[in-house]
Image (cartoon, rainbow, N blue to C red):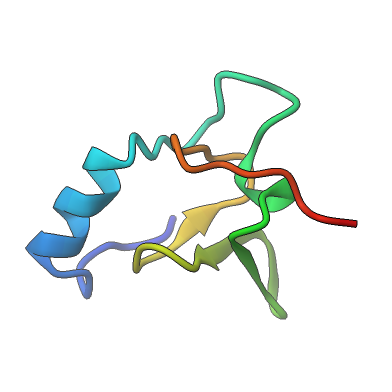
Length: 70
């Protein structure tokens, strides 16, 4: 389980405003295939995002999801 204890109240609110959820409602659109995804070297299940702080689940989703540019 990834903790949000180090994430400020402002950042938690931002996550909520962006509609972040731990499990994407769409199998085609999830954090790990988003242009804003920042993978961690030591984890396939969790990474970070360029627009908000704190852990981000690979299968998560938010309203700013954008397809990766290949």
